[in-house]
Length: 107
Image (cartoon, rainbow, N blue to C red; front, side, top):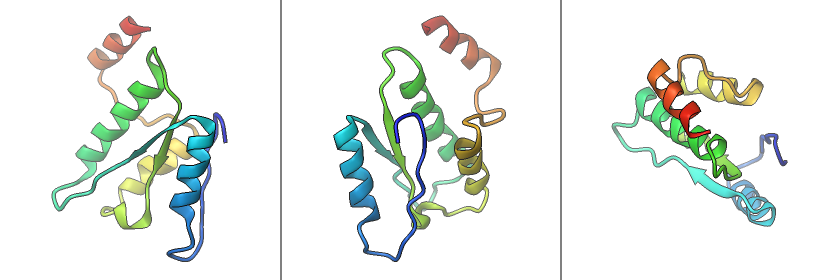
């Protein structure tokens, strides 16, 4: 689970979130989960992912467990971003050139 990802599949109420939180605690990871509201859309998800990438990649970097449940996927376009995170970790056009420059300046 360090430097990797996991996909937990099972019936509702079987303890997937609890297991993920317990494993994260044991590994010393910070747990992050989005708070979906009625106005939560693709732009808000991108901002959440930007913040997670900054926390995980900019010094002092911290190990993070990102939990996303099926009920939090309110737009099918979310799946494109999640697939990019799981497949390669690279989300095209997530950061602007100015944001990249600011991040590289902090490294």
